[in-house]
Amino acid sequence: MKGIIQDLNYNRICELVAGYGEPKFRAKQLYTGLTQGKRISEISVLPKTLKDKLLTDFEDCPIEIVQTLTSIDGTEKYLFRLADGNVIEGVLMKYKYGNTQCVSTQVGCRMGCKFCASTLNGRIRDLTSGEILSQVLVVNALHATGKERGVTNIVLMGSGEPLDNYQNVVTFLKNVTAEGGINVSARNISLSTCCLLDKMRALAEEGLPVNLTV
Ligand code: SF4
Image (cartoon, rainbow, N blue to C red; front, side):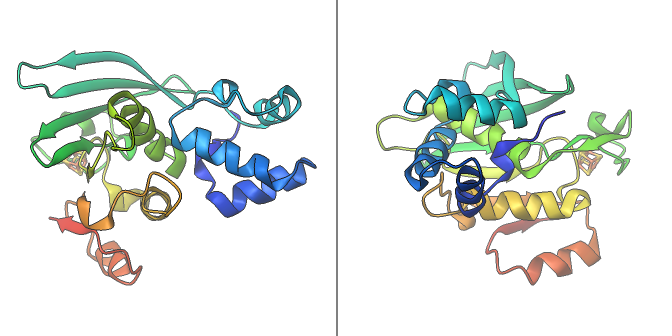
């Protein structure tokens, strides 16, 4: 499997582009295009030579929506396919104050909560930070209008225990709230956990003012 470029923050994208021998403004163009939910191949301002280098090293489409179910209240339920063929689910709920997206953090889950179907086959694998971020980027692109974001609130309540994939989730939280990126407010993000106490304590030390739901 190739790399997931959405794992990289802006500084690391700058280093990557410099390593390819390209000028710094290409890093900004690449980062902006990815933030808009585009595939590498769809970022038309990038030269073909740079796209070819990127596509040698990175997945063009780390995640895609393969099915959408829409309920009468406008809630949309998505089936996402990952580059390795695994599938995960997500939901977008529309409220007067904005749109809340529920994202997944793992393929499956090993926590074994009795009421939950996500755990029936155990944990298949953790999602990378970029795979979590890409769920938001592609759904935001569907619903963004002008300068208004299509996703204003995020809940980490899809498949997976977020704190069982701690480092990728923390990196996702830093990247999704980064200025210059999609920049969702940390106060508009809720992380749901079945109570992994040591990780909850570690999260409290990260300086990320997200909400915690236990
Ligand atoms: S932690 Fe969440 S995803 Fe995992 S089994 Fe419990 S409710 Fe399901």
